[in-house]
Length: 212
Image (cartoon, rainbow, N blue to C red):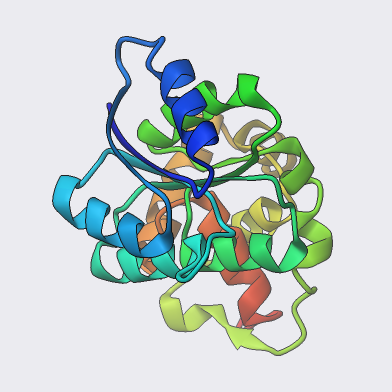
């Protein structure tokens, strides 16, 4: 796994490099200290994961991530920060970051990096508990049927937005977990989204469903 590491604290960069490279599968191919360097290093190395701080001088990590994701929607970006600021979390979710974890919990960094590399979205416990309160309940009607979303699919979308796991959704809708996974794959394809985190954000951003 090739990783680019960006943090404006050189000591943090050096410490993270030592910690992460204890795993022989992890290779820190380059490191930077600001958002502009993050953009340039991503373009040069095309890493499997970009591990990046948020608050940096000049171009912030969020600004850099937005630029990178506009150019490459498949970029895997994991934010590692000391700040669980609500505005940062919301923006990280909206731009499509694959994860947001708190820097002080060093033991979670390597597992989170591997999870993002495998295609999962990772948000630390401190972040996950905030998401339902951060995202406003839908206010404006939105016609999900314009995306050819069925009633069953809408039920699954709603439960995903409420934070239920595939197993919990399966139990509530009397389906198998495999069927729920299949439904989710179809839903994500219809809405042109990458994962269940983006699906929840899409639901909260677009309002109460109509057209059913």
